[in-house]
Image (cartoon, rainbow, N blue to C red; front, top):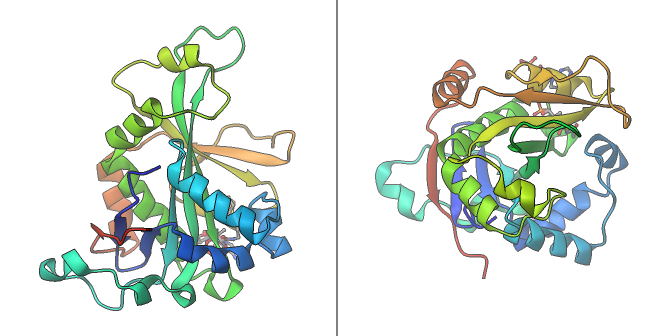
Length: 251
Ligand SMILES: CC(C)(COP(=O)(O)OP(=O)(O)OC[C@H]1O[C@@H](n2cnc3c(N)ncnc32)[C@H](O)[C@@H]1OP(=O)(O)O)[C@@H](O)C(=O)NCCC(=O)NCCS
């Protein structure tokens, strides 16, 4: 997705930057870890494939992605915001993980006559053990939620007017009622991944079913995408100073 190609988000707890080609080498090293592959249900890719994947995340209209980095050393004053993010702020040694949204049009069950809905599937990773359980995962999710809630209309505009690659037929895409809205955020988590289940359940995501699916995963959904709720959660966890700032071009 192009909406965030030149946007970084700074809070007191994390810095989110658009996934760019200079992040790929470190990302590639993370994804060689078998534990990470299992937890994120990912296949290992060659470095070239990882570069191609980064480009696809950048350009496909159904994918929105940020790299999670250590927070900026100092909060940003208004005057500094224009030139805020320096190359050293999201260098490889400051990268912590990634957070993604994958949009799809859901037709519902066979025979279900209700209108198709837009669903956003979230994926989150804090890659290295020494960075886990320090609040980065929760801070990333809440910061990302705030961005999605604030930009819902633009995100859905880019998605619905782009080349939708998910399985929905063009007929069902045309039947999504206007104004477009996100029905819910969804996450799929392996039944053994208790820490991820705890993180998402702690932020209002609820299991769709008490039994895991065929792949051994629980699906959890959050339907309340109101700004007030997200702001309350940011405040509750002491995440301050949310600000969107310009980010350098990839070219
Ligand atoms: C799961 C993951 C995203 C959590 O991120 P994190 O930064 O380590 O977690 P946080 O420090 O933000 O923890 C937030 C909450 O998650 C839960 N949690 C996190 N780590 C936990 C652990 N080791 N044991 C139990 N609960 C845990 C807790 O509820 C925690 O809140 P608390 O610290 O107030 O008790 C991260 O560990 C990770 O990316 N793991 C590998 C990949 C993965 O599993 N991704 C999720 C696939 S959907």
